[in-house]
Image (cartoon, rainbow, N blue to C red; front, side, top):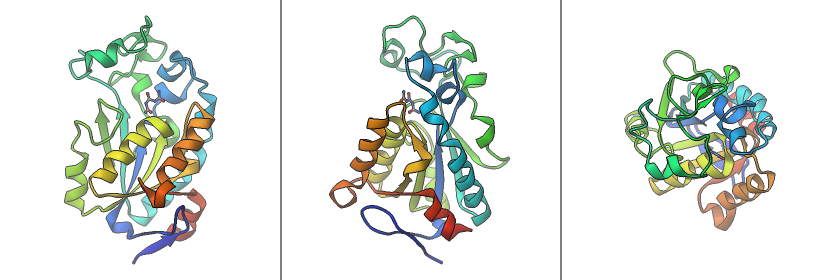
Length: 221
Ligand code: TIU
C-alpha cells in the first residue's frame, strides 16, 4: 500500500516494499571526538543531534520491512582504492590511513571506521563499504536496489552537503526518487546543512524531497 508524507516541495508517496532507508556514514570517525571529522577541524557536536531521530526512524523502517542499507566511507588497509588526490587533500600530516586515536583513519576494520553503537546494523542488513562520497560510486548499490525492485530512497546520515548530497545526486540521475528527512541528516556547518536541504527541494524538487522523520513515523508505525 502506498504511503504519503508531507514534504517539500510536495507530498512524497512511497511503497514500503519498494523503498530503502539509506543510512550514510554514521561512523565514529565522523561523529566522535578524536575521529577524522574532528581532525579536519570540524565541530563534531553538530552531528550528535542526528542520532536519536535516526534511531527512531531506523527502528520504524525495520518494523515496516523497508530495505535498510548502511554505508561506511573508508578504504582498504593498503590504500589501493584511495585516489592519490584524496590522500593528498588537506596537506596536513594526519590524513586517511594515518594512525589516530581510533585506529587508522577511515580504514576498514578500524574502530573509527565502525558505525556508532546506537545505529549498529542488525545481522542481515546491507553494509556497504564505499571509497567515495557517493554511495553509488564503485559499489554494488545499484545492483542491490534493482534486484529488490527498489524505486525510492529515504536518505539519512552525514554529512548533509557532502556524502548525503553526493548520494542523492547520484541516485537522482539514476532515476531514484529521494526523500531526505532534514532532522536525520547533519553537517559540521549549520549554514551548509540549511542550504543543502534547500538545494534538494528547490526548483520543484530538482534532486528530490525534504521532509521530517516524525511524518515518516506517523505513517510507518
Ligand atoms: N567532511 C565531511 O563533511 N564529510 C565527509 O568527509 N564524509 C561524509 O560526508 N560522509
